[in-house]
Length: 458
Image 1 (cartoon, rainbow, N blue to C red):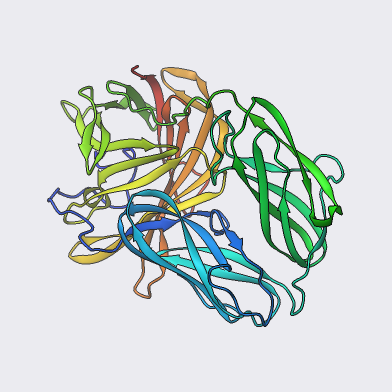
Image 2: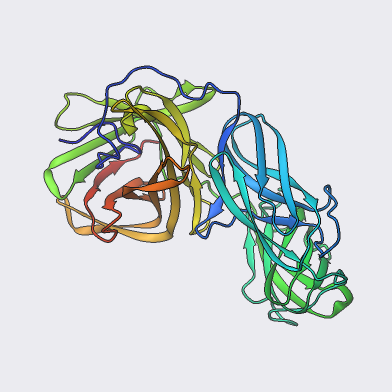
């Protein structure tokens, strides 16, 4: 018999069995809650490093800084800090006044002792990520010697991020990564000439070998079309050019989890045509919760006579949030409501994020659980087969998210649970496939829900 207490509208084999509901709000403390953003390798996203770092030279706290991104789930005071590596560290504190993604600056203190790459662990709450900081040899603070890959023609394998639209000012999301080959370590300071209303610039430190320079865009595009941006290193020793595609109008907003009232989806469970689920967005419209409007999703299966409320969903920019009773879902003896991010549609493969830990009692003993999400595929085709479509249906433009559960151990470390799940979200359709796995058999599907039909209301 399927449980109705699943996350993301699922009837999956859950971390724990469903428990009774008892009202108990989560998060009465004053501190903020959220998580650092990182990729699959554990590096912070973004991992901006400002200033020059030279062995035996003391840092200037307002100049030697790093920037990290935090997904804020609860407002309040915050403290974000690194460990001490090679004689220096970074730290930032303040108050988050709004939820969602925000960039935090950490100021450097101390003096690097040796040259090389220092890998700092950034910590906020229970989340952490890595920022590498290159340190020049003592006396090596002069200009670096390098060439752009592709010089003197087009920059090879450059990566332009963000949308570029006529009359829309560029933001911190508009950056370009350029690959270089460094023959002598040192500093760099690059600013492009203005082209079609846009300028790109970047400063930092380069060690010898293959490196990547990130240039930040400023200005406002003037005309639509391809704009070529020439890049010249200090002194003109090397040049290359990259292109920016400027749109006449903003791109149509993508939606990988439609929520319009009355929309509905039918799923087949484990290839059993007689075992089905129907999800729908409450036809009566959104419900305000904690200052945000959520579309309440409801579910019906053969074991219940009518639709049952499951969770609320909302979208903010490129981020998708769920508001649900995690206490009930995680098997806690008391219920607790919580909101967290479950899908990001504008981040690359390898991006990860982790929820704040959730505490409760199970079987009379305290337990703490957090959920980790990983983007494992993007813009792929999901082929879904069910009894109503035996030849399979191809859903293009699909994002695949893995969902893992981590349990805090007595020594303060986190251990992954024995199960994890994959969710397949298709553009303008929603959840088309869900698979459950055991960690000791990660290639064997232990549970699945496959989309049989859907209807997206206008």
